Length: 623
Ligand SMILES: [Ca+2]
Ligand SMILES: [Ca+2]
Image 1 (cartoon, rainbow, N blue to C red):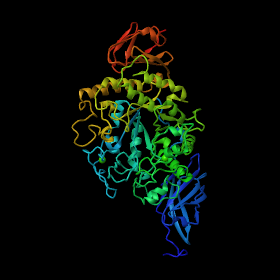
Image 2: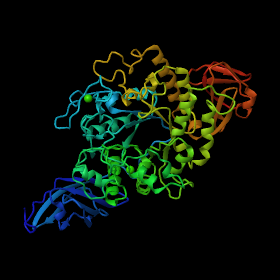
Image 3: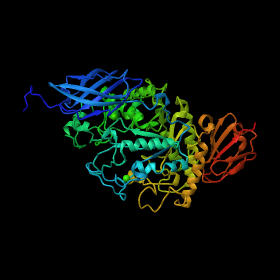
Image 4: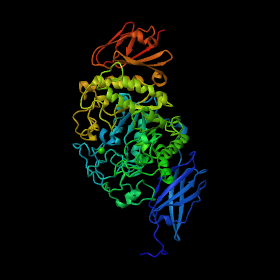
């Protein structure tokens, strides 16, 4: 045993953030210094002009030290920090960079955009040399196994940037790209990236931080925004914080974590899994027991739940999100499992992002199927006691109602498209309905088509999604009718994009490679997407909806006299649209064009619709 007085070896092994930026509105910077016995440091000194050491915070682990700096008057350059401990002096160099642009200049995604969600592992592989990375935890690349890695990467995405332009989407959202160095065994999959093991490093199987930065830069040159998926609720079991916990309250359930001795054994009786129920977060009658289970229970036993009430941890996470904005130039954030984290801490995060980047946007994953729940999470909601500052929430109600409607005939009251009509009624609850993100499928749901290929119903869903007062989000492959359900494995709704991988004989990146049905859907959708770009009626227009009648659901968007009329026959039989019923949005208009097909229709008489037909009619209202 070493005596208490003996000088222990002190090292500086790592500092997070890896570097930082001067000229931020908030001049404060937390450095998390990791190294052997670094807690023994008595003093931190720097003579770099404009930098002051505000405070030093010691945590429970001997190997962490937090140094809070104030960079108020600092210029870009490399500063030297001197850390004095046990009569020894350690020095660390730290780079302060100039910002590429002011925070106000960063423009987030909004209703004028269409997001395209893709999984980097499953979209396209541009390099084979990153499929196996030496020194990482055990994993396999095997494209025949839906739950293992398939080798997709940043370079694969980069090589197909023109494809997104051809399709007509304007923003890309990748599922998490940060390092997930968890072993691919015991049935635990890692390709999806939701178990972060390094908040400052892109997973090397996807590429380097520099490749990510270049990909975003090239996307910007092609008019495409990039949204980064982040997770503050939990990290991966292989994160260094798990084996050497910075402080006792770094994780929820940290006692269990210690008892389990770094192994994920959920049989331990003290383990608490989240109920996956988000109602306690908005329920005025919620019990503390339920609330605790929701927020402190772990998502799964391999993803330790972070305690965002620890202000030092939250500062680390807030800085991390700012660092990625500054370093790679993302245009938005999608926050995973938003309501599973502490609401006050998340609101503080959003408030700070809003102050630094007022035109940036973040969407929180708010997986509740009633608008009355979802709306409370949107910024400035009067329904909530405290402001979340979260600008964009996800409309799972739209997804859910559509999922039910697609199996039903639209009747005279509740069923079929009536469900969508009723869901939009609740828009009065949202402070800003134009900043609500809607989708028909994503990586966590069955594909819209299930195991079928019903293109008529898919067109109805897409026609609605792309014309209503929402930020639309597509999921990769919808445009070529990719299908699948989660029944056997999530991997079946996350299949490889055809043509993205070496040896693919089916190539959906080119017209020639697509089947007739795939090309038909691609064509129809891309016409709608290109038309939607910059369309003022869709971006700013008022929305008027009509109660479904004769099985037909009609929604109008109007901006001055410009009108877009979405007409959906929600039945499996022909139906007649009685034009006079819609006189207030049709007036004396006669000849109108259906955007995705280019066909003309005559509104001077009743419209005969085919089974499940969808029309997106655009015209200038004649009064
Ligand atoms: Ca690869
Ligand atoms: Ca949590």
